[in-house]
Image (cartoon, rainbow, N blue to C red; front, side, top):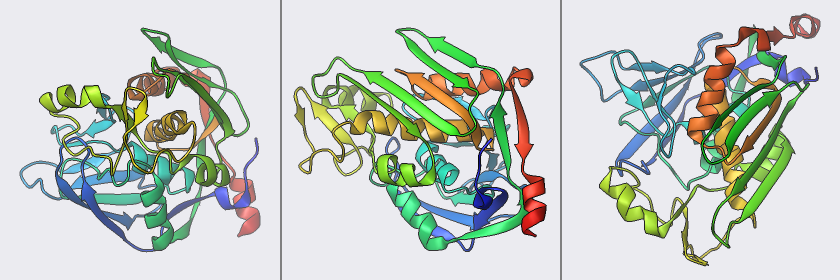
Amino acid sequence: MSTSTSDIHEHTLAGPAIIAGVGVHTGRRTRLSIRPAAPGHGIVFVRTDVKDRDNRVPVSGEAVVKTQLGTVIANADGVEVSTIEHLMSALCILGVDNVLVELDGPEVPIMDGSALPFVQLLDRAGFRRQEAPQRYIEILEPIRVEEGEGKTAELKPCDRFEMFFEIEFDSDLIGRQSVDLVMDEETYRREIMSARTFGFAHEVEHLRSIGLARGGSLENAVVIDGDRILNPEGLRFADEFVRHKALDAVGDLYVLGMPILGRFEGRKAGHSVNNKLVRELLANPQAWRVVSFERELAATA
C-alpha cells in the first residue's frame, strides 16, 4: 500500500463553509452550510427545513434510494437529500472525513455543474487534522456488476486509488471517450474537478415533465443539440463528458464513508451501476478490509 503522511489522519474543516445556489432538478434555491465535525462522525446531511421528522441523513451505501440522473440518499423517516455526488466527490479527494452538511431544501445546489465551486469553497474554509487514524477500504478481490446495454463497474486490488472510465454515446460530439488516472488530489484538481454535467436538448422537455432538470440551464450543464454545443463558451476539455463521469464515480463511491485503495473500472456506467457496485462490495466482506496507518500515526505524534 502507498499513502502520504498527510493522509494518515482524519480531517474536518477548519471553519464553516457556506454557499447557495439552485437545485438542477428541483429548480429550488438552497443554502448549504458545511460545518466541522468530531472524529468518527462521518458525513451527515441535515435538512433544516424539515421539522416534523428526523432530519438527519447520514451518508452510507445503503442510504442511497434513487439514482436517476443523480444520487439521492434518505433516512428511515423518508427524508431525502438529492444530487449529493459532486459535493461528495470534492470531499473525498480533499480528504474530508467528518462534516455536518446543513441545507434548507431537498437538493444540493448544482452550482456550475462541476465540483470546482465546492473545491473552492472547501479550500477557503481550510482543513483541520484530527487525532484519529484515517481508515481506508482496501480491495482484496475483484468485485464486478453489470446492467443492460454493456454497463459495467468493477473494483480491483491496487495500492492506490486509480480510475478507468469509458463512455460511448450515439453522438458525433461525444462518441467513445476514456480516461485512466491515478485519482489523487493533484490529478483531480487538474483533470477532473471542473468537468461539468451534460445533457441533450431533446431530452429536456421529457425530464421536466417527470420533475427533473427544472433548474437546468447553460449556466450549470453542457447542453448538446445535434452536432452543436449550445454553451457559448464551449467545452472546458475536449473529453469533458467522460471526465465528468469519473467525477461522479468518485462521489458515488465515497458513500462508503472511507476512501478506497483500489482500481475502479467503469464502462458506460452511471449512478445506478456505481451504487450497485457499492452494495455488491458491502455484501462481500471477504473482498475488502478496513486498514489504517496507526504506526505511521504514532511516529508523527
